[in-house]
Length: 198
Picture 1 (cartoon, rainbow, N blue to C red):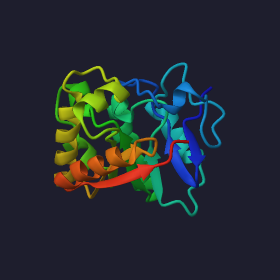
Picture 2 (cartoon, rainbow, N blue to C red):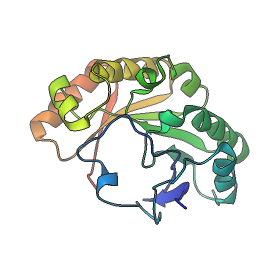
Picture 3 (cartoon, rainbow, N blue to C red):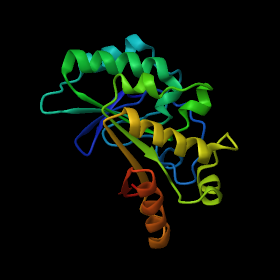
Picture 4 (tube, rainbow, N blue to C red):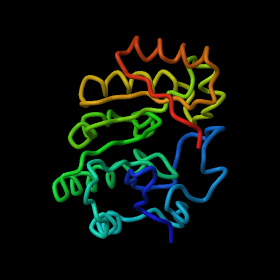
């Protein structure tokens, strides 16, 4: 059975689903079965809300301030379980909630999900991946033709409703692309984080 909660670099992560609406060229799940202390993050069947809550209850949150929704799928693809389990963890254990997302949740659900996220999410980190639509579509390979525009619109809306919003890019990008990504992020009032490719 796949791990629902796992730790990596002293952070606690929730692996909600293996569903994803992208096929990013650099995605770690195409290289490894697990991350951190997880043996495998591949679910045969996505966990139920009860299973996610049980995994949260079984974890010792002593010294942990944040619970991060990020696994081998896009967490907003399991939106109901994300919202309900995040509320549960926040109320019962007092942790802050971060969601690492591709920012395509509004396109995936064909509705505005930001107000739902804003009820429970303290920080949202959105994978920018590239500074232009052409590069983004090539590296991210999303299911939606308007994914780049949808992701930017999602980020802008999150900035209006969620406490902390960040873009992330992986450090395999060229210096020029990282700088262009920073300018794009700045134009939307969003901080850019350059993260290492593990």
